Structure formats: structure tokens, C-alpha cells
Length: 71
Image (cartoon, rainbow, N blue to C red; front, top):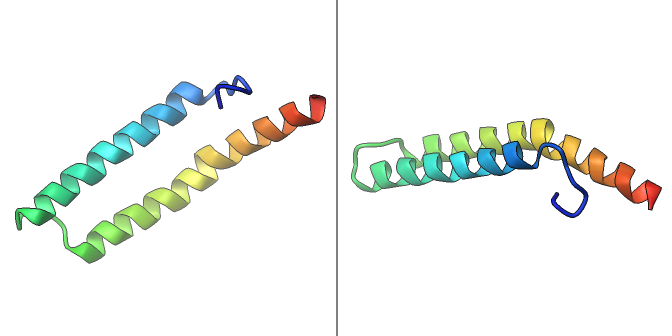
């Protein structure tokens, strides 16, 4: 993303950081017996990934492809 000056780089990076923090918190809660079940964790991660690919990764890929076509 940096190499091709992707304009959404900072937001994209922030979304990954937020996801990692949320997932880690959910895992800690689960390990302590207070949080979501494994099924709920899997559903959260699956949903996040699907949404992320559609709304963040696809636009990034389009940007990088367009930059490569100009090279």
C-alpha cells in the first residue's frame, strides 16, 4: 500500500489494528470463561474478514492494479 501511495493506507492499517485488539480481547475473555464461545469468535472473525475484503481490500487492489497499468 505504501509503495503505491494508496490513499486509504492509514485507515486500512487502523482497521487491522482495531481488529487485532478486539480479537485479542475476545480471546482473553473466552479464556477466562467470561467471553464469547468459540463459535461466536469464529463467526466474528468470518464476518470481519468478509466485510474487510469487500470494503477495504478490493478498493486497495483496484488502486494498485491501476498504478501498475501506468508503470
